[in-house]
Image 1 (cartoon, rainbow, N blue to C red):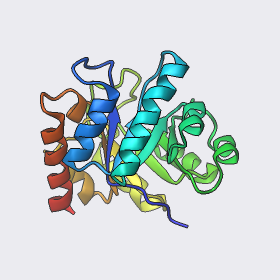
Image 2 (cartoon, rainbow, N blue to C red):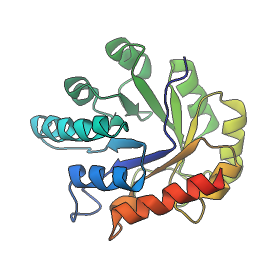
Image 3 (tube, rainbow, N blue to C red):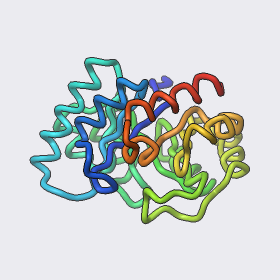
Amino acid sequence: MMKQVGRLHVLTDTVLQADFSHVELTELAIAGGADTIQFRQKSGNTREMIEVARHMQKLCSASDAVFIVNDRIDVAIAVGADGVHLGQDDFPIPLARELLGEDRIIGGSAATIDEARRCLSEGADYVGFGPVFPTTSKDDAGPVSGIDILKQVVEEIPLPIIAIGGVGAENTAEVLGAGARGIAVISAVCCQENPEQATRELYEALTNGG
């Protein structure tokens, strides 16, 4: 069964900027056309994270947007999220599947073709691949893969591929041209003065570019 993997993933972040909360970013991104919201918080109080995630989940449910929790499978289970997104060093995908069941979405991060193969063999529903372009959002991002590697991954891995890393309205067409299902962004929305407008520009680039 092919699960509903969206095309415009906005990862909420309150470390790179302090103007908007996770909940505010969720509202603004959904208003701008995001179909997938990913709660991304690497540290902090678990109880508070569950509270924030619960609010985000409600907003997503009301708008038919998919709600994904980055890394924290406990938070995802606690709030009944639509799924989780797991990095190569995060919770193992097969174990996550046992805990979440078949109906939930599990995304995996990959920076190389080998890592993308691993996501596939472990049972991921989609692969977040990148950084495709230079990015300042993730301090742990590996070397830039570029469009050619993205194209190879799309050709070899029979899963929806979501491009991440330095993706913006100006290069979305290039990413879609390589065959990616969609894009995932952090600073291209979260660090903008008007996140709703920034999301809308990405949505339009996605719609017009494929």
